[in-house]
Each structure stands twice: as structure tokens, then as C-alpha cells.
Image 1: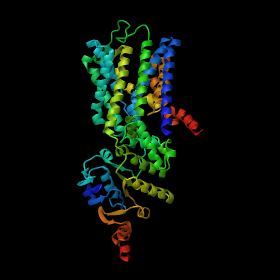
Image 2: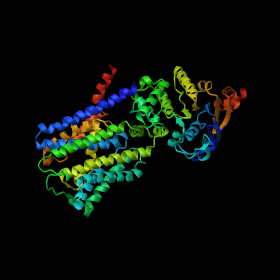
Image 3: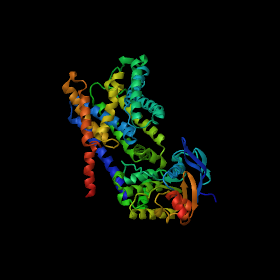
Image 4: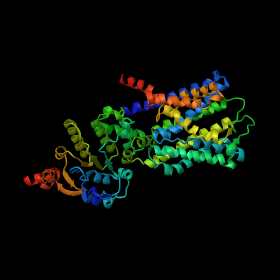
Length: 243
Length: 328
């Protein structure tokens, strides 16, 4: 069976800077995959290429066996890619439920159905009690959850999470981890960019480590964290030799 | 449950609007003064115009300061069709609306790619160009304008000399239709798309919103309705020239009630027009001929006060109350 998502030899150059070089990764159906790496490794660039913010300089991106390299973000959403933003982008002048309705309208333009769907998703994400307040009044961790809720309302096959667990209190992060697990249980595949290793490692089935724009290592999280190359990338060569 | 309360809220808005229309319709029974009736006609017309502007500027967040173009086009198309081709103003009105919508699409194609203030600047420039073109276009009357000969009172020709009431009722109808269109759109896919585009286009795209198409749709609907208002104005004053229907002043007059009352809200334009238009009309007449421009000073003053004390517009005064009720 083909993978749900595949990138084949993807390059992204910004002028002279190479942000991604020859990145080939694949994400299988029903997996939770973590995309990790130190600052400047090219995680966000790759993430944005998959989400359709811009086309790669070179290489192709495949969803469900179809080439989506040239497909714009709007259309990728229709094809089943949902995403969140690292810096939250709530619709601030709209209520929480209206934010989610925007996502739900991709699948149903019938307003009552979209509203019901949005409310279900809010319940799923634990935001139902906040449905009628303005998005601007949410606290940061709730805004993160709203990002997830909005993306889920589009009924994605693949959910892209961009650092949704970063900058949360341990308790909030734990709630977030449980939410991601429940999302997977509903049959959604998850690809998450994360910074905080100790939160993400127990959660993911597989980790892909990027460093300097290339795939450094990929595999089971327990193996990846012990890999000398990964330790070197995060902490510097001196520590790797010690290990 | 949740969708029930939302439906109730919307029904309440609709009932409130029906009550307002019914009350407004009764006002001429008591108010016989022609001057006051005149102010009421203008108030209703600007309520409708600002409501139309609000679709593009308020909901979709594309601030147009060139709506005088569509207003003027509606007026000119109606006047030209009537005086040169004997086409009844009702058809002229629709034709003006359609032409304006098409022009809005043609202009939107390049300008909707512009972000933020650049879009607003482009709309000013384009409307100004159109104004100059009409000022020099002999066939369309150039600077002399077009005089619509008034013969007999007739609904078919939409001309009335003995009474302002027919104009009043049409203006009321226009304002009600503009409100109703907004009410309906607000709870449609378009309404949600527009607000998403206004708040954050990147996030909107990631949720399947076709940003460019949304803007084009808002622009066309807004231009169509604005032109209907312009067509009405041409018949109401029965004489038009570029200065009186296409000058920059109209772009301001069309957008300010929405800004004052509450931008991107259902009731903002109505509230703004009800406050703004009588105040400026009265200052204009009290100060008289020497005080040309004083009404605009009043406008400016009101806007400064509102933006300092109620950045969300006058409607913010009411929504505070609403929130308190909700807490109870």
C-alpha cells in the first residue's frame, strides 16, 4: 500500500540558503510521526511545503498516491490536509465556534450542518464551554486547541501540527498529548513538528530527525534519542563522543 | 442546544428589523415637513449605501474609499438610459447595478492582490480617474451633467414632484433590502469566508477558503447594491453631474456610517447613518452657504471621538449590555 504522504527528493532554496536538501520522507496511514531537529534544521520549511504554502524548488510531494506538488494550500485542504500554525492565527473578531465553522464549511455548505459539526469538534477538543466567546479572549493554550479544532473540522486525512505542544505548562501539554492520541484514534494520520523531545517522544510512533536541511536519522523514538548523530546535532559533537 | 440559540438570535434580528421598518413607514404620517422628510430620505439612502459598502469593507475587510465610482455609475447609467434611450429607470437601475458589478470584478482582478492600505489607495485613485473621465466625457454630459426632465408624477418613470413620500418609501425599501441581503449573507458560507479573509488570509486558505474568489464576490455584491443607491439618488435629485455623484466626498459618506456605527456588523451602518446624516444635514443648513465643508468637519470630529472612546463603533455600547445579559 502506498504511504499517505510522501516527499521525494524535495529541495527548498531561499536565495543562497538551502533550507531543505533532498528530503524524502513518508508517512503511513494512521501513524503519528514526529518531525524533530534543532533550531534551523528546516522543519518548518518542510512543514510549509507539505501544507502548500509554496512549491518546493525541486522534488515532488504526494498525497494518497497523487502528485500535489503544484496544488495550492486551499485545494490541499479539500484533498485532506489540515494544519495548525506555530504562531496561532485565530480569527480574532469571530467567536470560537465561528472559527471552527469556517473549517467545517469545506465539507458542508449547509449552515446548520456546519454549525453542528463545529460544535462536535469543539466538544472533542474540550472547548465547547468557550464556544460563544470571542477567539481573542481565549488563553494561549486554548488558542492552540482552537487551531487543532479548526483543522479537524475540515475532516483531514492528514493533520499537520506545528509545535502545538510547545510553550505549554506540563499539565496543558499532557492534555494536548491526549488530544493528539484521540485524534489518531478517529483514523486521522498525524505529522507533528516539535521542539520538546521529552513530550513528543512517548507520543509518536516514529521520529524523523532533520539537521541542516537533511534527514539525519529516522526510526523508533527510543532508538532515535540514543543515536549518537542525533545527540551530536542537538548538543554538539563533544557530547556525542562521550556517548 | 447550541444551534437553537443561534437561530433564535438571528430570528430576533429579523423581527427587530421588521419592527423598525414598520415604525419608519409610519413616520411620514406624523412628519409633514418636507425638509425633515428630505433628511429622512437621505438617512435611509446612506444606511443602505453604507450597508452595501460594509459587505466589502466591513465583512471582507477590503477597505474601499472609492465607492463613489459605483454610486456614480448607477446614477449615470440610469440617467443616460432614461434621457437618451427612454429606458425606464427601473431597468436603468438594474443595468447600472450589473455594470457596476462587472466593473468591480474587472477592477478587483488586479487590486485584490494588493494588501492593506495599498488596496484603499488604489480604490481612491481609480474612483478619481473615473471622476475625471466623466468630467470630460461630452456624450455623458461632461461637466454640465445630465438634466432629467420631470414631466408628470409616475411610478413607472419614478418621478414625483408633489410629494417626497414615494422617494421615502423607496429609500426605506432599499435600506431594508441591503440589510436583508447582509443578514442572509452573514450566515452563509460567504459571510464566514469573508470574515476569515479579513482576520487572517493565511489561516483562511489553510481551511479551504478561496481568498481571491471571496473578495471578488464581496466586491461584486457591494458594487451592485451601491449602484442601486446611486440610481435612486439620480432620480431623487433629477440632475446629476460628476461633482454631485462621483466626487470623493461620496466615498467618505458611504463608508463613514459603517465605521461610526460598527464596521463589519449587521446593525452598524444603520445606527451610523441614523446618527450621522441628520447631524450633518442640520449643521449644513444652520451654518448656511458660507459654511461649506462644516458638515465634513462634524464628520471628522465624530470619527475622532468614536475612535478614541469606542473603537468598535457605536454598536459597542449595545453589545456591552448584551454581554451582561448573557452572564445573567
